[in-house]
Length: 416
Ligand SMILES: C[S@@+](CC[C@H](N)C(=O)[O-])C[C@H]1O[C@@H](n2cnc3c(N)ncnc32)[C@H](O)[C@@H]1O
Image (cartoon, rainbow, N blue to C red):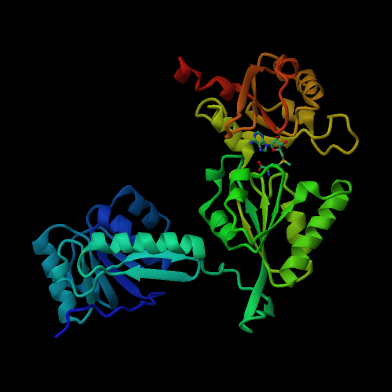
């Protein structure tokens, strides 16, 4: 007789799952049940703060008392997440009587079902059982996860375009992903962004994306350097849109890799519209934006309790008096919180003068962070009244973020 488990994928959507216990084990188990759409009934006198937050948000039903047999009415599965063996055994006895599978955190040998170690990649779920040894299961799971991170299942976005592969005749998906690469440190790309990058046939990269990310692309990937496209800025954007659409329609998996976040002064919206107009499916992967990361990398939190209750991100690429400017600098001068200015070095003297003329104190702390999160990061600390001259003297260059507000000095005590 074999004692091998029989693997199944339980489709729990809308089905009652009872979790007995509200401690650390339940805290770890419940999210996957909710992710599967289960109707979770949690029975426990106490809950961890994380579980209570889910209960308060109406994501699960909480019965604040000890288990009674009627709790299993209508249940398809029960998870026992308590370490009192006598209480756990009484739950499994009721479950067995009612032919409900029962997972036991305290005693796997007494359980009628085991939870596997799991890794998820888009639509693919890999579940590993280690023959009763959870450590073995996790080791194998980790190896598979690493393998999938490189090989990769297709993204969850269903493709609508396809072309037959010359060798196999199998339809190939063409699609575009607008991926935020983060501010400069290659490790600040998201896991999803990295996964899509490793799947790409074509990568269209901005000037500001971390070079090391490109260094790790497969040799057969076509790399288009968007900063080398000739013509002026608006024609170049049209050209980029066209490249994205053409390559995707030809069946390629295209990653448009953009510095920071694609939708923060990144023209990601225009690219999405161009792809949508051509019927090309698009995934947008947010990135770590320099507007928050650059201050953070210089030890400046954009908000701090009792200091700043707002932060405003603004582009300084146009001077305050430029007819095309959409920014109300006079109104920004009246705010008390943090002002984060991108692309503002060139116009910094005019910007700071306008803020001061409209009421912001020249003594307000200010900082400039150049090439944040990279090995060549530079930080200048100053005041609103002096920062433009100081940046000039220090020969600061783009890319740089200017931060204005009391948060600039908030964490200085740490340096002492
Ligand atoms: C066209 S905007 C793109 C912003 C980008 N989408 C983001 O979310 O960070 C370029 C500006 O972002 C800022 N920037 C980007 N990367 C930076 C970095 N590593 N350090 C400082 N500023 C940076 C600079 O102000 C630069 O001029």
